[in-house]
Length: 411
Image (cartoon, rainbow, N blue to C red):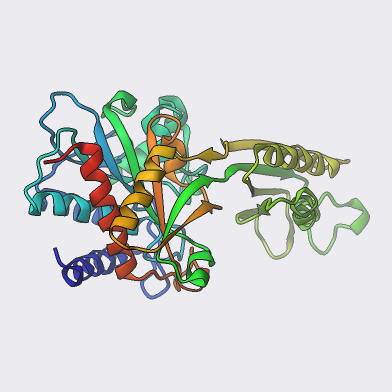
């Protein structure tokens, strides 16, 4: 397929998927097991079938499209990413990787390649954790890190369970969930960088060396509700004031730790959320990331100490760890192969580390994983302005195609 045709196909996919949003004109909002999820998965499954792939879903709603190999019961070379979004996010975070995987499979079929090891396209659910919390749910579930009971107990902010939400859009939560990792030979993921480095260097491809470690904490502060006008200041147990004191001091913990450590509070729920009622219950998130596990562990401990330091008469605090992922170095052999194919195709590249978590970091503990980044315009992501060039996605498709040919031993 010529570059211009490949670009047009990629742009068509991205444009079509971007229309499946709950917030038209205000970015992409595609929460897991929503109607927008259903429309997207139907599109993805339709394209998989159009490209000659055998389609199935698992008990989490992860989508797999398989081009069978000639070796009986051989493990698959898997290519893909996620297709959910954050609220009011962009069109490229996740879908760019799914689209690239679809186009790699299309090239296999178009060029009549017969793989010895199967080629498998995957579209994963709930990587962002925007509906059910924690993040990386599809990949964590697939490898067995998310058990059946824990999965069933997950609820969104409206109290809807994962199982209820799946059934609502016609998915079957009783399907097999955990995948035998012996059935996966390698995993390749394309993602937008979500930062400024590649664009500033004017380099179209980043070969990811390692992914930062991260943790997500959920902090709960309980106080006492009261009338905003009749409760004296010295008699209050204001959960929001206590939470604000904690949140305002969190950046200092990351700055003190240094070495690129970052900390973020992105979600804050206040109850009963009345303008004239003293808040009695606040729940907020704390996201901690660093390239060194030691830094992550240090800041977790300091955060817990800070949270508990506001406990006093009338104020109770608790901290729950929703997610913990160690820093991950991606497979050296796959990295070398990606660089070799970039050079063979005369595509400029550089080595880069990922400051964001990705499904590849989960799968890297179970199979040989490799990852490519493409530039993000102005370094922006998780916002409507998020944009990446289809030509860069096409370049990544070319690199993955050549790499997958080697890994699948296609002829």
